[in-house]
Image 1 (cartoon, rainbow, N blue to C red):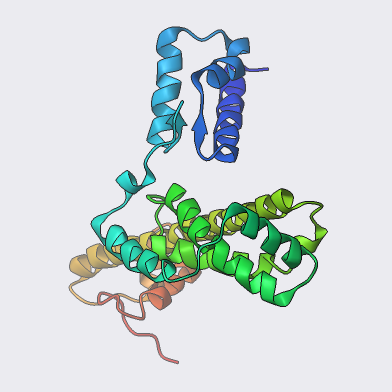
Image 2 (cartoon, rainbow, N blue to C red; image 1 turned 180 degrees about the horizontal axis):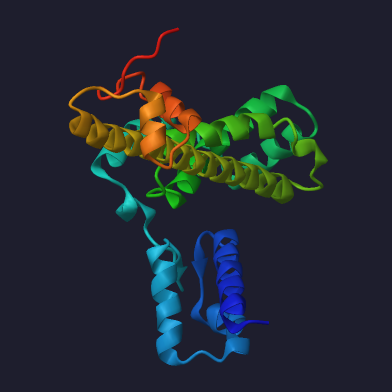
Length: 247
């Protein structure tokens, strides 16, 4: 296998393992994972630096609060103050509630949601700085949690049910981030199209000393009439250098 490809795949596996361990991994685990590549000490340090940059703790968990903005800290403090009003449970009580929820007890499922709300917050912190608001991440996680408690019956033991809920929460947040990335790319593509048509229309308009038609702009550029009309529509018909077309 190509060395660069093997390195990339190994790095992704290391990040996945760290995520399973609370976004933390040991140096020995990293070294074992990359053993086949026989990395130098300097190269391993670059791997450690990369992991820390992506909020993975080496030998000990990182403090996710350090990655929050002031606005996120203020929101989070208010939200945690609300959660503090909920009745805390011991580990034994949490396990008992999980067992009842697995058996289909609706009240226990509602209680399990309350128990996991702080966990949603901790998971959301992992994904800060990825182009979405912490508040939105928590909202997505809470929706996944609410849906997930009705599915814990398929788990064989409480720890498995709790792990399933955590995974559903993480999956929901990752899906939300991916959707936002795709949406931003689409928005940028639209903006680029509008700007391109506007620049070309401005240049031709200045040459002709008047507004230009779609047909004229298409004839003078490599852009199709369809492309130009889409840009005009996306701009809300606000490209001032273009003649308005009759209905």
